[in-house]
Image (cartoon, rainbow, N blue to C red):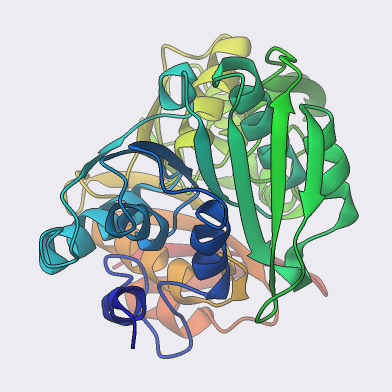
Length: 377
């Protein structure tokens, strides 16, 4: 077993969902690191984007990087990296370097010569990342972007080609592949983007960064829950849990001028999008957006209304673990008599968990979505 194999074998996902079917790394992490040093040594300073639980960051340090600037969209991923680094120890890994967390901004990539990227599944997310690197990194920057073959498309090559003059793919290895991008075009930045919708007769402008779920659209689950906005209890303080672009929070604030809404999401892109969406619709003073793991920091029994359109996947895997954590957290934060309004895929078995919180009634149901209201006992 190589040193890197040992590193990867010891990585854990916590505080992210841990499950025997979910890993803290995959073959694409190894391939990215191998391709980065195939023709030259690891530079002293490296940028890592999209690391999930620390495989790329700690792997780069183990391979000789002295400083790593890393951006992870999820606060849960950041904490997993920190926990793995603390438990394993860089000295034990044979590394002497350090890493620092950065937002997705110019400071992340300024003068960078090597960027290691776990390819996001969303093309919009890749577009924003590519623009940022090609605008602010060094002239001789190399981007080594990898992923699982089943999640990669030719559209990714074409999209990278809008920001870089040279893009080529490696051969596949263990169901993974890498795209190399070089020679930046200096395209400038075109993110975030916006689109205006009509919600209950009111215009609502959605502003979205590339990584934000559903982008400038309003996903079908949120649309379904919005149909019942006027039936939700008239709480003075409400929470939009797993807020995405903040559509539910902003629509509620528009409909009820007295309400204060806390919008939380693990995603930095979601929180930035929510802030921009609230400001674009004139309710920024009544919608607070906070990056958080669920409802951390929200006192027990304090919320009168929580709205939740939970994810049904973890990364690329269809898995209910994230949604189950959010539902449990909502139950903790609800005040007695407070209500959790939740929209979920009708084939998923959340009803038992909702019933454990309190009386749950089915508000609507179709072949795709169920809307429930749960009053905490």
